[in-house]
Length: 340
Figure 1 (cartoon, one colour):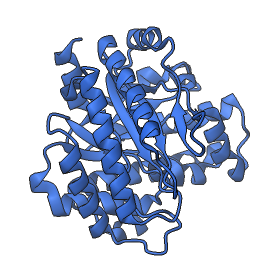
Figure 2: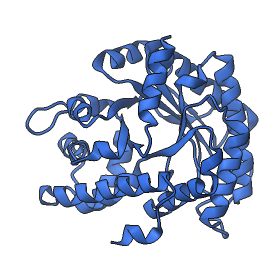
Figure 3: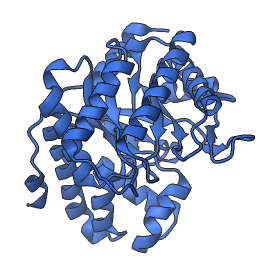
Figure 4: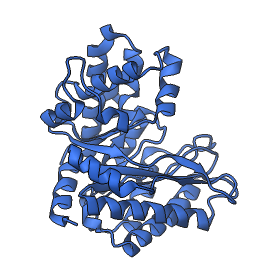
């Protein structure tokens, strides 16, 4: 393990006033986003969409790292320039989603386990050779009346830790993503309890697998009420619950925390990130930023809708959302900014 290199990469990813863009949707996920907009479900239209994102003017002013899907790593712009080269010219570090998706966990109804450890070391070495410098693995935790169970949490934490250890040996910074889903009717307090349990399990497993905290990044959910909960707490309460949870669970040695958006509306995700900085900027031991997917580029996708004539306007929307999230990272965002 080259810890100095890992720390350098993590520092670049957590650069002040920047965040990450997650553009690593699986084929099934991106098809679900394309279909309602009438976008053809083809490799060429996926390439066009990725080109729209990576060629957005001045994107590197707001984005420090881009999480890619394997298909995207090998794609190029219409005039033949590899996407990896475009990102490098923007000063954006390229990373890669390496898990192979969550499947049903046998014996544990309603719970998932993420696959992809087999042959992972070889794949990571190849990605490093191609110029990628970080990776991502997502575990999925579902809150219901009967879940999550302790064995499911433990199994997912172990897989996250093995993935992270393999990443660091290959020279890639692991982004560790234990996502407690916002689906359901659970309360903010219930999400807090589950996320606390999950993060304790994850960091215990990371420690046991000898992962260097200084060379990793956490990508967690915010502490939120379920999307179908009767009470939807205001941003200040979400900020309180989220930051207090992380102060109790996340070692100060971790360079940064980059939130997933998890299905939040773009404006709400930004408002909640802003509230955390307004209320806690002086006590945060780690960088606190964003690693959004839908909350960053869904508005641009809807504007583009597969039409080349809409590319520039869609890129303007994408840049604006990235810029607004950078303001939120400084605690300088107000909701009315997104309306102009």
